[in-house]
Structures are given as structure tokens and as C-alpha cells.
Length: 490
Image (cartoon, rainbow, N blue to C red):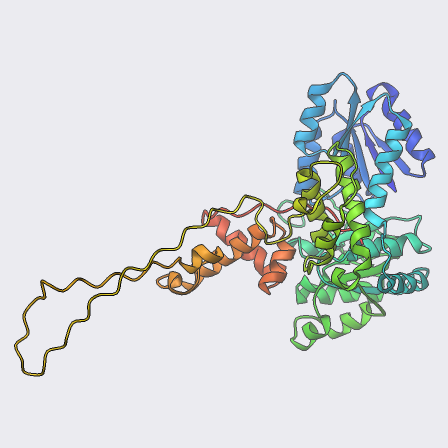
């Protein structure tokens, strides 16, 4: 892995770097935040940034966020500098490492980053067959298209291919095509020159150049605009790219991987994806099975996530009860491994006793709050006394003072109260746009802010969802924030 160290701190940082080197990391050292940003822009890249808390940590994280550099950052400082440690964590640092450095702690952080990115956990034979094919094709330079439902672990498998390839000692670079607006994705892939467009404050090396000699992953490539697909096809065919605003082509040497949670052949037929690009990418296709198709992995993965989040929350590791395992194995898991991971994170926080019981397993769609008390059924009023209908032409009084008034019909709970969603008559009088907005917001809330999962449930592309959420925000509508960006583990 590539480790970028920012700061000095009296030699302690260098000692941490030496420990990381002994653990197999490639370490580079920059004195300040501006230098670190220059290194990240220029294509040096990093899998982990370690920064001295004496440096402006918030400034670095803010700059990385603005330029869409999604590298995890850990802060480090003297043990008695608790205020700086708290400030760094609040600014967005993933961890705080006290100095002088402890070799075991440094090794644990490096191992955690590496394992989270590329560990493949499986037991089920169907997953074993996929890994066997991956092992066969990993040493080649052939392009690989990895397909499967959202949350099955496509990026994890891509990293696995890289680790097994002859390029494993080079960098692995990933680009989420769904998360970057169309007008910025070209710059993200191919880079830009200073002044090429508003906001291009310095030359930026694109992901193709950053991955030179290594592996480039185009995650969720089906979301890429068809106009940019033509430029991507040329880059793949010619093995050269043009920076935005540049006038000289740049040669690149990469192994290309791509992922999609959609049916690309259908996209091609509908004119949303170039057929020639599809065949360029689909030299090999690895289809990841849904979690519900690999039942033998459910318990194994659940135990893995239980241990992971117990450690993350400073809680003791506890086994799963038999009833808890049965609940997990009986669920449909439409969110696949990512949904299972979130479920186990909740279970760790809710469990009590010496094991994780079934009561701590809150599955998707279930309420974590206690159910509202049932309303006792209403007793029907006595039937009214029958009144004889007068014969035609007979005298009819204006009122029947002696006859009782008909009893009102028993009140029925509305469908909105019964099901938690508005149905039937409750929709009358509302515009289609209003109902659509409510459906999207409710679905996103149900998915804990996970845009990709919500888009799949709604049957729309992530780009369409993103555009609608942007419009809602501009209208002043409260939009659920994005969910955790934890990568799924296979």
C-alpha cells in the first residue's frame, strides 16, 4: 500500500514511516498540507494519509473533499495532545494514533486499511467458483467486467484481482463514475491543465495517469454519459489520453477493470451504452452472486462484521446465538453484503448479555422503536329500528321524530396509518411531482441515505436520483445525508 506522511513532529513521524516500511508499505514524506495536496494532484496518490495534528488537518480534509480525493486520513500526535486529537476526529480523520509510535498499532492500522479493501471472505461453493476464475485471469492484462447487484462486493473483487496480478506492486486507482457529475468526470479521468475551466487552480493529474503501470477501476461505468464513453473508448484503444485544456497526448499503461450493477447488454440495446465500448470492457465477465444465493457465507460474514464493529466500538466480541443465525439466514438480503454489514453494526450496539441474540437483529424494514399500542376495536352500535316505507302517494311527514338516527359507521384506520405510507384517497389532491418527491425521500430515509441502494429500489439511475435530490435541496426540502461509504466486503 502507499502511505503519505504529512508533518515532522520531532522525528516521531519518521519513526512511524520506518515501521510502515518494514510492514511492506511504500512511504512518502511531505512537510506540509500544501505540499501534500500538490503530491496528490500530481498523480503520486496514496492509499492512506497520516498527518501530524500540529498541521491544519481540517484544511487538508476540506481541500481533499473539494477536489474529490477520497483517501482515508489518520491523525497522529503526542499522547497528551487530547484537544488536537478530538479536533482532528471532528474534522473527519478516521483514527488518531498516539506518538511515539507503537509498532503493533501502526501495523494494525495498515492491516485494517488493506483488509477492508481487498479481503475476500467466503465459504459457499458458488463464491469459490467465482474466485477460482478470478485467480485464473488475474495474471493477464485483459480487461474484466465485474457485474452483480449493488452491495455484492464488486470493488473488493476488483482489488483482489489487482493483488493477484503482476501489477500488484503498482497502484490501484478507483473512480466511482456514479458519484461524480458528468461535467467533472472527464477531468477526473484524464486530468486538466491550470485554467482549463473555472476552478482549475492548478494542473491536476487524472486517474489514468495516476494508475500508470497499475490497475484502473471504473466503478459503476453504466452511469457514465454516452458522450464521455467515446473519449474513454479512444483512451482504451490508443492507450493515450488528452488532459482537459492540454494539447499533447499522454501515453498510459494500465490494466482496466469495470463494474456495473445494471444489465449492460440491455443498456446497449436501448442506446444508453456504446456497443464497441461494451465489447472492449467485456473480455472477461465475473458475475458476483447475490448474498441470498450463497447461504453458507451469511454466518461467516456476520461473524466477521460482528468482530469488526465490536473492536471499532470498544466492545467485547460476542458469538451469535442460534436464533440470531436463523433470523439472518431467513432474510432475503436485497442489499446483499452491504445490508448485512449494516445489520451487524446495529446488532453490536443493541445486543446485551454474553451473545448476540435474535432480538438484536433488526432487519431492513423493521422498526427499532417499540410498536405503538393496539387500539381496541370499536363496538358496533345497535342497528336502527326499521322504518316502514310509506306507500306511493301517501302523506310523508317532513321528519320522523320517533325514529332513531342511523348509527355512524365504525371508524376504520387509514391505509397511511396501517402501512406507514400514503395510499388511496390520501393521494387525491396532490400533484404527481409532490408524490414522487415524498416517495424518493421516504425510500432514501429507509436506505439510511445510501443513494445507490435507493436508486435500485426506485428503479432509476443514480444520476437521475442525484439530480432530483439536488433540485429538492435547492427548493429547501430536507434531504437525508449520504450513508456511510464503507466498502462492502465479499
